Image (tube, one colour):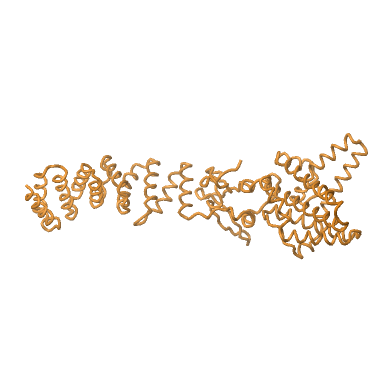
Length: 476
């Protein structure tokens, strides 16, 4: 079962932090370059814990091989392997009786097939290019495979001769079943002894489980399919073309088989004990499927999510405090900061920050949230916000038709704005207007208006109060 990223459920996780039990895709993890003994390596850290995260395994990222069989089957039709297969098949068909040519063709193809296996197992699903370095490299890998097959053949014939068919046939069948894992162990360990160690290869088979049987069945099909294809064409084609077809089809199926084994080695590298370079894998496989790198803000929010999920409120509060310690902070982060203070049970800090948040909500014109928060401040008798902030929220109550709350808020503003000759006359004027227009109490409005005119003669609201007073009197 695929482990998903904690923040992108549709994406497979690449890493896991065992401190907070959070999983991360490539976009969510924090990557850092660390210089060690002159070389620079990438290390991956949990964005919340800042501890190094563990790679879950390529098998969690890579689609299983049985879902990729179509692509695996088409692998040798890439330009390089297709051209190489054609040229070697033509060469072999032109000189079918020259053992040196046939040996050369076989060695060249086996070297390339082994390179295909290694390239695929490292995470590069594109066929390796045909280079002089590749062709001039030593034939040790091919020789080791020959030695392995020779040992298995010798053991099979020995058991068959000494025990007879009753023991020989099962041994041959068991050897055939183990050949794929033996080749993969040979690649992983580069040791004939390790590859032929029954303790090792039986362990690997059991670790992989039933998918290994699926691999074996598909490889068996690949081994037998060329013979059926050749037998179909044999009566209808010339000897040259038959030789060419025999070589060409056999080599195509050989490349498919080695690519498939490389893919399984990549998929089950942890079970087999084969090291895969994560950065190389990312660079050369499935780049089209990788999600877009998340923004710094998204990563910060993910980090907060991890801390909150694991109950580390104090660290989350410290991170947020740095972000909101500006004149105009991100309002979402400011709200989250207050929520975290409440979650952490920080009563005093919650009480002190609530009026500050109200000021940010007013600046951001978050009317509904500001009105709700002011009501909470009044009811819980929290520290008083600035009179200007209260006045603004009271006006929003009035705009939304909540006249009683508006009246209470204007009164709350007046009671807490002592000496503020800018705010008090404005609040009184708006209270008078509410009494006249919505409270059906014009006499009370008139008293307040006269008080504004006499108490705050220098205020601009003294003139407005005088005009409004005359309009009320004229209506009367």
